[in-house]
Image (cartoon, rainbow, N blue to C red; front, side, top):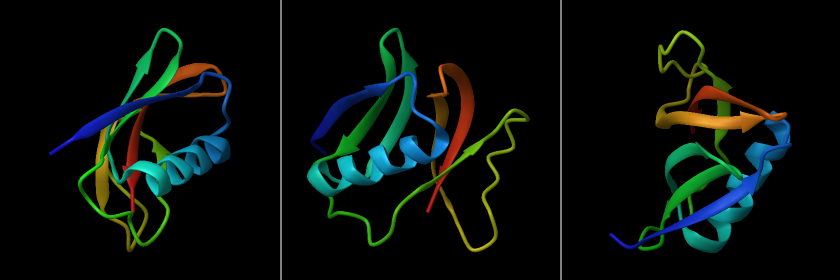
Length: 93
């Protein structure tokens, strides 16, 4: 598996973070990991896999349950900046 790490701004809202993930997936492949770094959110994307058929949904996961909305399954969990605050998240599709 060939991966690429891409950074996003700390100041992104939840909606902007979801749009950033989708735009990056369309250029690189599906999201595999997400984390907070000093400069902002960093996503690791799988360059060898095809672009996912639909956009990911990001849920803040303060209780670390890893749960997704009905009909969605987890893609990965980690931490991401939402409006300048590094919070635990689960990314679902």
